[in-house]
Length: 241
Ligand SMILES: [Zn+2]
Image (cartoon, rainbow, N blue to C red; front, side):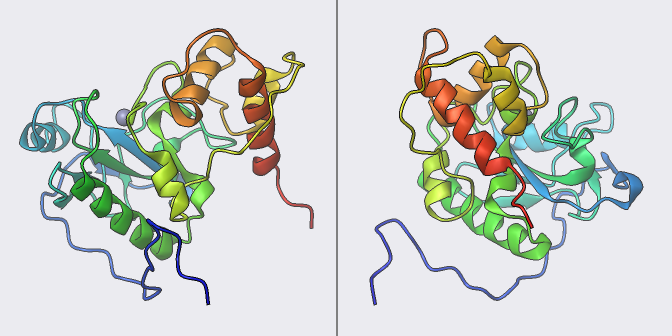
């Protein structure tokens, strides 16, 4: 039997119960129309310290929250029960989901925005993701960034976030391997099909695509962007029965 690839760890298949909230946030409500979470949205806090971010996420005046926060040494803080609707995504969309908060679980990662994500924080995230995905039967392609569902408005978890590492462990969709395509006319249509329904402006969609799948890449739309959009659109198409 082949050994797991480097960087791949075996995960327990035993389903763990949701932990109790250790810093309960009043900023939550019922999920609308009895929705269950079938998306996970990753964020960074863009604040200096974990304590500062937790205070804000628990402040009734500010009216924002998330289900979890993970600090830079990997401590997981649970603030809103998973069955309830936390206020982390705001305006945005993903595929046919327009009320992202009602359909998602939000995880905040302590990061000012420009720093690498430490190993301990990534490990804690991976463990938490595996547990949430098992509890709610959420597949890897439903783990997205805030920049995916709020293109143009949000850029977190940002270009420093290691999506490839999550994808290697089945905790996010991988970036498709593509050869550049020549025809660039259908970019917006393809991006909408890929799930990016939160914007129509091709420039905004291009920024969101690159944050997630070509971090650090600049310049006008090119054949690789188009080929990526096409491959993601195909991956997102419902399988025929
Ligand atoms: Zn965010």
